Length: 258
Ligand code: COA
Image 1: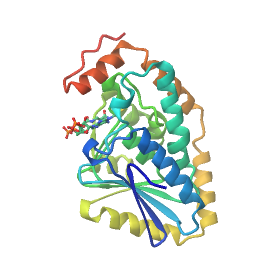
Image 2: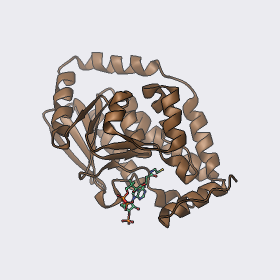
Image 3: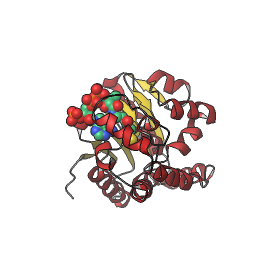
Image 4: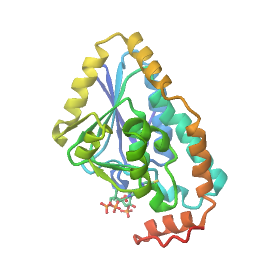
């Protein structure tokens, strides 16, 4: 398989998946999501791979979100499908993986980027990382599970503050509120992720898979469906058109509430 936007390497039973679109801050376009789906499902069949680390190319961004240029003219149905496809083919696949998945957050983790990190079982951030769900500044809401997984990790109050304000937080604040498990200098990020994952994969693979399933079961709800539907509805609003136009034109949006 030739991947357009991923670099893959397996070393010491760990598969490293590096999202490789540095000029667009590793934003998740359609091709990247398709690549991720194939890389993940392929790795589940590979007996050599016992754990996975996901990171981004470069020192600036893990992933700066879903690729805004691809969905700027979507209608409500297309918006809903975008969220559903992404969730079922990538984000839920990571969450439900029998093999442990660690996000090594090497810079901006915004929108779909933070949602990707949150779908992973564990998150380690570099000191320069900035994390947030800025979708409401585009007239949208998170659509890849962010409205569900953020409150699971940090509680409802802090999650609502982050989602409604669209503010980014620093790595140390993310550590303080439990959004990331560890913060380390950027040059030690992969080392720290490897060290933790090596310890984890030395345990029983059957027990790891059972533990992941059991912990996930504590959070089953239908909120993901509500998110998909509400995400889709945003695409019917004038505010969404204004939000994405403002991003493309590098100006502040003037929302009308319609
Ligand atoms: N989708 C598409 N392209 C994106 C992107 C995204 N989510 N995030 C960044 N890019 C692109 C920019 O358009 C720019 O492309 P260009 O050089 O062709 O103009 C390139 O990546 C570099 O980004 P730029 O904005 O110039 O870098 P910056 O250092 O000034 O700002 C960010 C960095 C992360 C603050 C800014 O890129 C940003 O706000 N991105 C969008 C975040 C977002 O809203 N994500 C949620 C999407 S639902």
